[in-house]
Length: 315
Ligand code: RIB
Ligand code: CA
Image: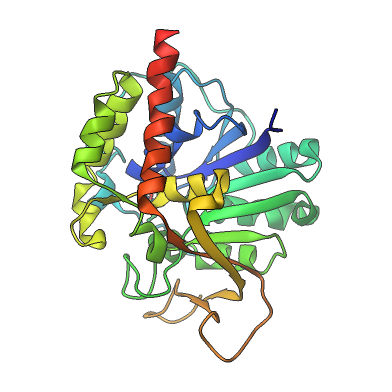
């Protein structure tokens, strides 16, 4: 029996965060210890409400802690133009039947990390503020997190600015704190998440699997079809699900260890991530850069995970 991996998912729901959470509940070897929310796509009140409603909808009994209302040292910039004012592009879920725990995200992260004795992994799919605050408050946390898988960054071109991807752009100082912390991190940049797209046909197939979760998975991602410009119009890039599935099973990806840096200054380059994978200047490796995905295999995993809701409802 494969040993389960203790996981915390830090997110800013958001269309693709919701898809990632729907998938996470069905990953058999993930022991999701907590969900933590951060301001990002929409303000914290909405990211938290969306997560609580989704967990209630999925009947998923996992603690949720609210995190940062904004970046470490900058005003919050959101992405309502993509995710809608409330973060679900106008879709609604039944009212939540639960509340956040009383601890803030960074305290819950530390509490669980200590309890798991260094085995804890974090999947971070929003701005990295919560993790940065946790590291600042608890310096020994660097020894208690096994690895962090991050949806973030862009080496070729950004989505929020020509240079920067949204999660890193919103809080580049937080990203720098994680990149220089010594904790092993795997960065899933736009360069690979744009290849990890799902087509409308595949979404409609999943929506026909017969569970309310697979129907909501289809509906929320169809709302993201406007993002398909990033994948040449072929489908919705599954930014957050890709990072989650890399953490679950990297076998349909390629990745390489390298130096990863982030620009925190400059009005044009703020949030730009850089790597020395192609440069002659070999800097000390501090992380991993996920480079490619086998899209067909990736989508096959997604279909398999979402089909588990149907099986669950039948049993
Ligand atoms: O740039 C894409 C990332 O920013 C995704 O995590 C999306 O949810 C937004 O947070
Ligand atoms: Ca996100």
